[in-house]
Length: 415
Image: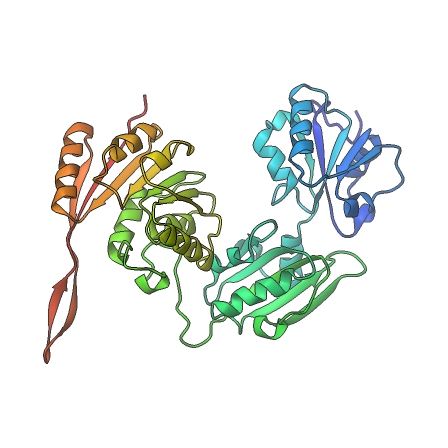
């Protein structure tokens, strides 16, 4: 038995994590796997870190999808033996290892991890890793970090390119977190390692080595709105023309929808996008599609999603039910606008996956009657939500009520 192939692992696609320290930082099994490989796939930088080898070296193309599909097909066919894929740091944290693991069974994959940049950053700063948030802005907008900006939170951000740190600093400053401690860690674990400390505001436009991570201790400027990850953000957190599910109703609606890992939400008649946005903020592995017929509102929903740290929100401009036809099947659906449009509820119910939840809110008598009829046919629960705020009335105060909201919710039974 070789070091590269423990019992039962022959023929697997091998993934080797490699750090900035290159060959010197690899363990015995990782080195043995690379020396035995017939073909090694990686970035030009990673391939340049290897010891001399007779293996065929294949740089990742751009885009990588074609070669990725080829590797998966070869693994499924049992012909991936002898292939090693290089990954940065811990392959299973972020990056190609995790991507392959989503497409291959464990029996088809053998991973040799390396300490991640996240682990190394926490070690350099003396931060308990379990208390630190990891955000990847690799192949994602820098605004992704905005979701976790809260006073006292520690964050490690993965970024790419010389301007990566500057882009993250700009987001912090724009969100009122310019005073945050801002530590840029370059070329971690090799002789060229460099650690630079400032605040986000002081970092400015400075460039960093393309291989860097950023550690942040969040400090807010006085008066900066503090936004929780639980549903029910203040209404003024959103740009809106008035088409916005109000804060307290929004919190009740999200609690009913109950975001779960890797689930997909349709937000139909999304308006400013608040339901979909808070679904994504509550569960980082979830996905959401916001469907809005008005182009200006759809664009506003995109802007709100970016500002609130979930730029991955997919916004579809179109009218339901037609705009729903080509969307992937959802695990949850919220109908906020266009409820009384013919065919919307039936189309949504038909598309909902077994075990999924549907929620619809109505403020008009017509919508209320419709939901009462839907409950008769589909079952579920009707709830009337009435909220009032204490507001001035002359020299006194009185309760001023919002329009009552009737909410229907139902779970689709599994067959």
